[in-house]
Each structure stands twice: as structure tokens, then as C-alpha cells.
Image 1 (cartoon, rainbow, N blue to C red):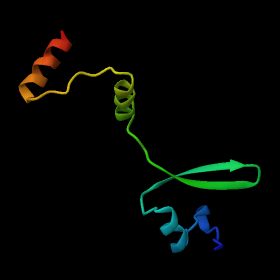
Image 2 (image 1 turned 30 degrees about the vertical axis):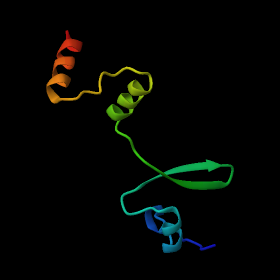
Image 3 (image 1 turned 180 degrees about the vertical axis):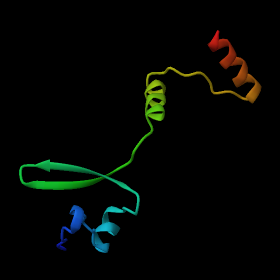
Length: 82
């Protein structure tokens, strides 16, 4: 198991072998979790709040469609907005 060193400003560099195994890249988000004296970094995907709410609506069946044409979609949206 590779060792890492804590640098100035508490930065840690993940070894290439670890990065490849967990498939993380520059800019990815990691969730930091502490249990007792053990810390774990887990790759996470940030989801925009609006997208998260829309997915929740979809799961609960609060949606209209599908539509065969754009005109049909626009008509349905206008009816729903009334």
C-alpha cells in the first residue's frame, strides 16, 4: 500500500496507482469521512440541485410526455402552465 505525505496547507497527492484504481482525475470531488482515527476519501459526483429535484419528480411520476413532436410537447406544457 503506497504511503502519502501531508504537505503544506495539508495537501495530499494521491499516487498514480491509487488514482487509476478509483478512476479519479483533476477536478473530481472526494467525500472526506472520518470514523474514529480512520479517514476515508470516496469519489462523489456533484449533482445540481435543480437536476436532483427534477429526478425526484420523475421518480414520483410527476412529469408529462413522451411526445412525438415538439409541437405536441409545447401544447402540453402550455396546458400544464394554465
